Amino acid sequence: MTDPNSTKRSKQRVKTIAIICGVILLTAIIGAFLLVNHINDLRNDMTNHLEAAIFCIEQGQYIEAQTEASEAFTLAKKLRDDEAADKSERIVDLTINVLHGNELFSIGEYNAALNAYLQALYIAKSIENLDIQLIEKIIDETEMYIVFFDLIEDAEKIAGVSEYEAAILVFEAAKKVAISINFADGVIIVDSGIEEMQRLIIQAKREEAAGLFDQAEQYLNNGQYASARIYFTGALQIFLELNDTLDIIVTQEILDYITQKMEEERLHSPPSDAGNLPDDTGYSQEDAGNQSEALSNFDHNSSIDFDFQSLIDNQNQRPANLIRMGTTEGMNEGWYNGCGWIATYNALILLGNPKHPAEIVRYFEESGGTVFDGVFGTYPNTIESYLRSLGYSVSHTLLPQLTMDIDDAIKSSRVSILAYTHTRAAHYIAIEYNEDLDKFIIYNDSFARTRSATLGFDSITSIGAAIDSVSALINNTRSILFSFSLIVVS
Image (cartoon, rainbow, N blue to C red; front, side):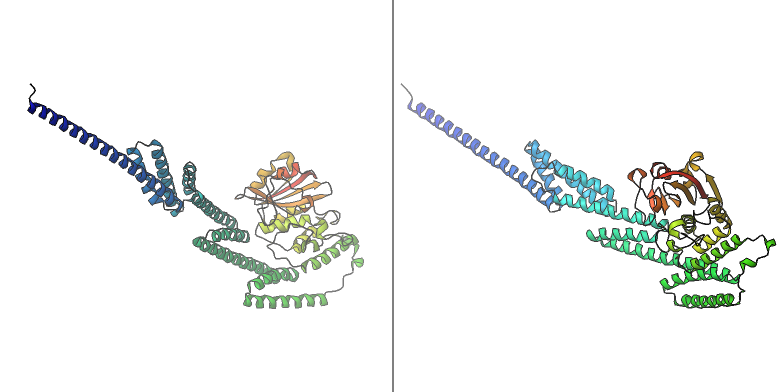
């Protein structure tokens, strides 16, 4: 017979077990629910940190973006979400590069900063749904800073070879860049540079005027009134430009005195009678005619103003085309036969010892240095002897293409004069080598102006033609036949 108590206890155990199982199951269900909610919370937090990081980057808040991305990376690791971890890590790398670029930018290391920003941009392009406009803007601005300081460096190099006006143009270009990026310190740098260039220009003009004035005084003391007038006039032009009142008054008074003395000499000099020259003087009627032409040319040429600093790059323009040389019959103006004296004039300016064309032409004429009385210009030997007469060390090579490297010879010179023939005539040009530009600058090549890319032509200079090779100019210009003379001042 079954024990009623045992049956009752058995039922209670079953009930207890059922309750315990129910509790365990309920606990498991609740635990699972809580775990899922926790995981979802973590994922939501991770997503929120990632979104916040992207938002901060787009707002330019890179430190905050780095913090948010680091938090997202930690959560991604907990969730074992490799994709989210990789994205978070790339965002951190992006912010590190931008912040490093900002640090370099702040100390003026713009090229290094640009590299950091470009690396950040490369990473940014791999991040989905990230607006990269702000990073691109930072890169553009950094490139403009680099352009600005490159222009400043170029301006300083140009100023280093005393091309102050050209340097001002480059400074002004740099100022436009500074204004475009709101670089206030850059504008100050430019304004300071321009002010310094203007000071140097004035200083150079005063030095030039002083040199002209000293030379004029020497001529005046020797009674060479025409030459003195030329140089005093040149000095006066500069004094007028500089508005130096006292110097203007003094120079003008001296010029008035010279004019008076020249008029007195003219009134008291006996009339010339070349036809009555005695036969034993050895002075022929033709010599007298040549001397008369030389005097007439000198008087005419002396009346033409030159500023003694501007190089002549086109003999067809004033005042160069007004200068006369040789016979007064036919074409004797500078546009026709002036390339020899123009090359000499330019060379002397480049040497810092300007001479008025009237003096140069007078030497050529009086020394018998003009070809067929100037109809065909000037002999190379005449230019050589004139430069020697001024105390320069000069070497002269005929047919230089056959015996030397023309480019090397010019590179080692202070200034050179090259003569060549072309399909219409012969021509002289003055040449200087600019080491900073690594270019040969040629002046007054207007009779053979067939420049092309093959010659390496560059318009970087305000006057003259900048070319890579003079030899290439001679050998590759179709209208040039050959060079016949190279005069080098060492």
